[in-house]
Each structure stands twice: as structure tokens, then as C-alpha cells.
Length: 445
Image (cartoon, rainbow, N blue to C red):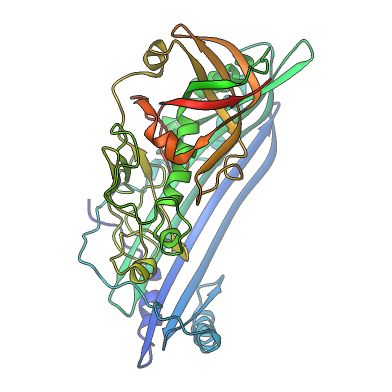
């Protein structure tokens, strides 16, 4: 497959960069996007948005000062004004010795199927019917279940990028998902559950499976009790693991490291996790929802192994954080900063059921609340509200809720006992997989 180019947008980006004056670095990003958001409730269309947008962003760097500007239109008058405003803003900025655009690093772009023609041509009426069908699947799974909401979302972007450093590319991508949230009622008690349906296009969605999953999550918590406080083994459901990986990824962010705001600062080459842990950031894996060909500075996105067999290998960097750290960009520029693009743990060999079968006593954590507010990325302290089910003699037992799980990120990574083979590609920057962690404090009754 040859890369799709967006010639009209590329021409604008090239024209802006061609106007650079001596001593100036210019970066131009030109984009056009559209999105659909649908919500249904009890068979009726409750919310519908179909929006299109376009815009130009320009960054100018001169004498260590950076200025940027943006406009929501693509005509020449607008982009000339944006360039002039970015230049003016640069004169007002303070001098930063590390300011500068990314330089080409010779890493080749890994071509991917980021565009789906079936999704592009998918009929709006069918999109609404998908949300309705997902609602029917969830509510029909159990008489105790009622709908909270059922949603369909998609988005498409065409983009072109050019800089005075010689970086130049354009491309397009689109994606979609459906989600459902339900409530289950029994004897005056209400519990909630949710699920996603994913695919490159809506024809790939398994709506029946998602509906049943949401219903089962809600009904499975009916009769939940507050557990006794103790130290125990936990099994993280794939969605919870994905959220956990998002936090680990943020601590391996080169910007946080150079500012001394990461618990992994100055630990390259050390064993920071169980030997079972190999954590990669791989936006070149097209199964990832956030797969990408380039980062936000136009460098090729690439597979970076962050932790291998438990040993910390690297941090992720943009060109800016790399200059501050005296190293090279890893193709991880995100917006104006740096971050992981598509995290995944190398999977194990067992299903979640088989992992649970190996546990005499523990807890399956199915959801967590307030995760980001409950974690300190500098000290590693970890404490979050949770709900799930007890594990006894290798089997799931009664549901539990209103408890917290606590440890430190450092301990949790070292205490990983097993990783499942049940990789779940979620609509977020990390894939999920079941993970077993020993010696976590559960605070309940």
C-alpha cells in the first residue's frame, strides 16, 4: 500500500513553510476533520451531532523564542494572518535554550491501514440503528437491566505537516466505536455496567457480545457487600490494566523525568518490574486504536520497548525533552508535549479463567474509581476505589464494592505474578490484558 497523500492540505503547509525568513524555524500543520456522535435512549434518538472542522496551526521559533497561532479556516488570507501572529508571539516569548523543531532522524514511516473505506461510506441511518441495536442487546440480556445510554461515535481526519527542517508528510485516518451503559435493579439496589464494541468499521462490531458484557457487569454486582480489610492477591480486568498502564506510561515520560517528577528517574538498566513484564509503546501495531504513522512533530512513530523482562530500557521523548535530556527523540511528541502513543504488555499464555483457577483467595478487580487522583507519579503511592468479585478456591465468588486497593506503583510492578493472553484493544492509548498482582492492601469493612 502506498501512503495516501492529501495534496491540497500539503500545498498549504508547504506554502507557509516556504515563507520562512532568515534565522526562522517554521512548523505548519493543516487539518480537516469530521465526527459523528449519536446517543439513543429507550429506542429514541436523544442526541445527534455531525460536525466538520478544519484548521491551520503554525509554530515559529527564532532566537530561542517560540510563538504559535491557529485559525479555523484554510483560506490564504487566514494562514498569512496566522503566520504573522505566530511571528509576533515569538517576539513576546521568553528565551528557551532548548527550543527548536525536530530534525529528520532517518527512521522510516511504517505504513499502516489507518483508513477504512467502509466506515467512510457508512450510512448515518445505519449508525443510529447500531446504537439502538446495542441498547436492545444489553436490555434483552436480563430482565433486571435498564438502559443508561447507548452510543455510537466515529471520527475522520486528513492532515498535512511541513517544517523548515525538511520534515513533510500527509495522511488520513478514521475510527469508530460503540458503547453502552446500563443499570441493574434488584430489591431496592442498583448497580451499573458498561461495554464497548470495536472494529475498523461498524460491520465488524459484535453488538450482541458488548450488550451481554454490559448487562453481566451490572447484574454481577447485585448483592455486592463491603469486603473485610486484608492484604490479598488481585486480578486486574483488562480495562483496569489498560488504565494502570496509562499511569505507568506517564511516569516514563521524558519530560517528567528531566523535571524530576517521575519515580523512574535515573533508573535506566535497573529491574523495576517482575521479569514477566515487557511493556512496549507500539503505535505501528495497526490493531491499536491509537495506531499512528507519525508523532505530532512529523517524525515516524516507532515501536519502543520501555521495560524488557522487568528491566527499564528507556524513556519516551519529543525532540524538546530529548534536547533537555541530552538524547534523541523517540517519536513520542503528543500535542505540545510528550507521551506514550499505544501501550501494550506482552501477553502471557493463560485465559482470565485459568489465572483465577490458580488463586486460592483473592479479588477480581472489574472497575476502579478516581484512579488518576489516587496515584502520585513521583512517590508511586497508589490508592483507588474499586469494585469486583471475590476469588475462592480458584473460582469467582460473591461480588464486592465500596473498598479501596492500595500499594505503590513500584511494588505492584515487582509483585506481578502472571499476565493473561486475553488482549483487549480498547478505544484508548493502552491495550488491556488480565494481570495478577500479589500483596495488595484491600481496605473495606
